[in-house]
Image (cartoon, rainbow, N blue to C red; front, side, top):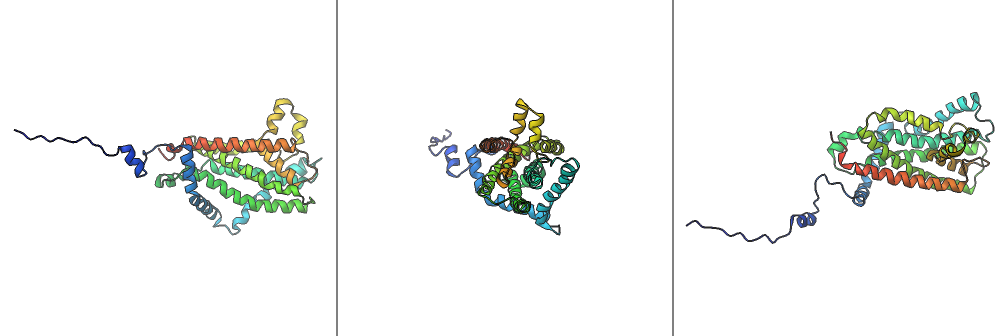
Amino acid sequence: MAQTTVVEPYSGPTPKEQARKYGLSTAGRLPSLSEYTAQLWAYRHFIWEFASAKVSAALGNTRLGMIWQVLTPLFNAGVYYVIFGVLLNTKHGTDNFIAYLCAGVFIFGYTQTVVQTGVQAVSGNLGLIRALHFPRASLPISITLVEARNMIASMGVLIAIVLFTGEPINWEWLLIVPALLLQTIFNAGAAMLVSRLGAKVPDLRQLIPFIMRVWLYGSAVLYPVTKYTEHLHGWKLAVIEANPILVYIELIRHALMENVELAGSPTLLWIEAAVWALVMGIGGYAYFWRGEKGYGRG
């Protein structure tokens, strides 16, 4: 007679309990937004070091190095002043047009560079993404950090220009800090938004320069904001004046310059700046997080 074996029912921990015990998770699972945020915080040193490496790689072979981060907006401001301020005479009726123009060029350039670089944050780092496991939002955030560091140096130059052109120092200069902080949050969200779009639509990289050029002309960078009130009315004027970059430019001009005409009251501008920072910062972050599993896959 054949022998039979009786198997006792398994009474140990379930696979889920075992996975929880040893910190295991399902491969390819999208983490919750809170888990993803915790992962990003755990990789904060990686983000900072990656940002520093990007700066060294971009400027390490140039003789002037970091000085180019200041010279570039200065050269742009000089060209725009000759074309728009002198040849087209857009400076007419604007007190201290040089400071007015430089504030617009510097602040617009901050967002412009983040967006133009951010569109390739994923598509330009596929080798790194496929080789290492890390939260992919580290890439657009590191780009924002690089430009934030550059912007600090640029603000020193902008303040020197404002002083040289006769603007007095006053307590409102302290408002530069929260204005730039809100713009940085907006920029980070914009970088994450365009980086996911750029990963899905490679042709977006070619369109971004044209989009930014239109955005430049719609942000009162090169001419007084009063030009809009002279030619636009109703909802069209309201849309232009709610332009986020215009709002951040106007806040910096209000902080650094006296007797400058703004697109709205300072209170309204601060409310719009905070709303844009929250909408773009949170929205761009959530949109990027939703595509986390697909980055780097063929």
